[in-house]
Figure (tube, rainbow, N blue to C red):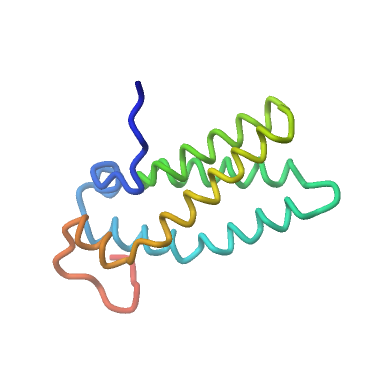
Amino acid sequence: MGTTPALLNTETALAACRGDPVLAYTLIEQYRTHLPAEQAELVKALAATPPDWETIRKQVHRLQSGSAYLGIERIESAARTLEMALLAHPPTALLMGAWQALERAFDEFLAVPGEDWERRLGVVNRPTGGAVP
């Protein structure tokens, strides 16, 4: 039986940043800042007639990679599932279920205030102005 992927696996995020919580927080905040635009591009590709499945596949592949690097497990898992569904060409109902799971993962991640990620990562002194150290 598998475990539910974490919204943010802080151990993975910190490992990716060589243990630097400020760098991890900064990269996660950059990810959060760009996520709504990524989501909008995916929605636009889905709304096309016919849907632009290749653009969606490329974007979810990129989301999967970036999310995995930062330990954003729910988005990574949902993006991976959607990409596999797109590559397998299943019935539309299965594709849409995978799409909805990715949308939920986006919403769940974005609903957590940045200060919570900061606290979870153990950031003591955050840089001002969003500069990456």
